[in-house]
Figure (cartoon, rainbow, N blue to C red):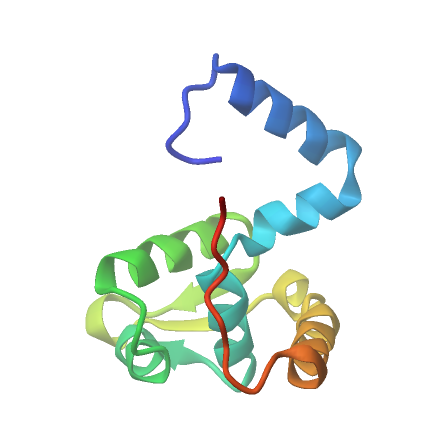
Length: 122
């Protein structure tokens, strides 16, 4: 819920849903696009920023930095080291998401179309 005013109706509604609904809470951790991929890649072993950037070439440096920071803040990742040598690894809480991510991967493998079509919202 970063980037929203705390006093906004949207913030209060989402905050209420997160507190009341386990699925909404899980979705708030995973986000929309990059967090599941980042967690999935780090599951293979601890990664430096540059390694993650090579593994996920479509994510911008700024977005990768922000997502790593948020995942660490929420307790999904742990960091060790400083500067260029800093490595990110899953915390025990982050590891608990792997079965869910595997299920998402498997479902996508079985159900995505051969040629991905962009989702157009009207």
